[in-house]
View (cartoon, rainbow, N blue to C red):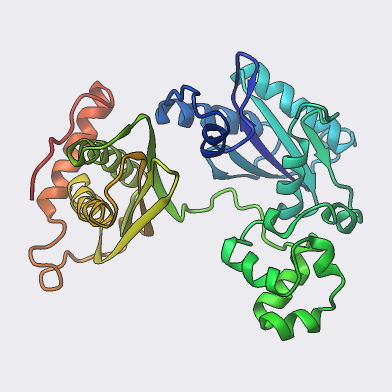
Length: 360
């Protein structure tokens, strides 16, 4: 049995159950207070520590989402029902972290994730934070959802499906697999036919390597000046590159995300010939991408983020570029300086030392 746990912070009776962008649209006069990423990461580690007491098979999908594989723990917990175990998890997390988690259970990660969403307490609903879908009940459970609720069915795929009259799970269930394959092709047709039935063979991966590392910041007040955005980008690039080095990884692709005051989200990416891990290299590429985004549309910015992806291990034998990048994006001096900064911060704290901005 697979469970999915996601946590939401509660403070002063306010239940954070929707994206911040939507909350601000519904309540434009609200005051948005930024939360330290380090504080969020610390709470995430605390939650994971609690969950690992129930099973060693815990996969962290993001800072606020976890998957647990409880297969084989039946005797350990005396054969108690899974909802009972899930409620004990919630109580343990609340007791030790002061955070409330919602837990969904099912025979696959897909069903568990959707069940965790159903479990979230909402006004006027009897949900108590736990919802378990029994084996054999997956199909009936899936019928309640729109296709947009299923992970990886994004806006463009939704548009294609809508043109075929497919908007809800029930719409797809009325079609046989061969019809779906004829409309969408073999890969997408078979994938969709399985997902609407709650079929998902992806395993829980406790030691899964991250596919990307990102840092972003939502500003309490929209930023207008390019220099102010560049200063925030420097801090974000510094943190993302430090995360890279802590994980022993390098990145080939750098992406900058910008969300404008009207909630238009834009991003730009660049893939390098050789991977990098120093804050100088990550920032320099990110600054170029930020300039590109600002040149295309210069309006106040609400959110700024940077992500590094196409990750490779630090012992992969990467050779610094001499020809493809002139000058090279990252030198051995850059990496040496980054290591020194890491050592100083480890000894004196995360804010002890950092790079200043450098115009190019």
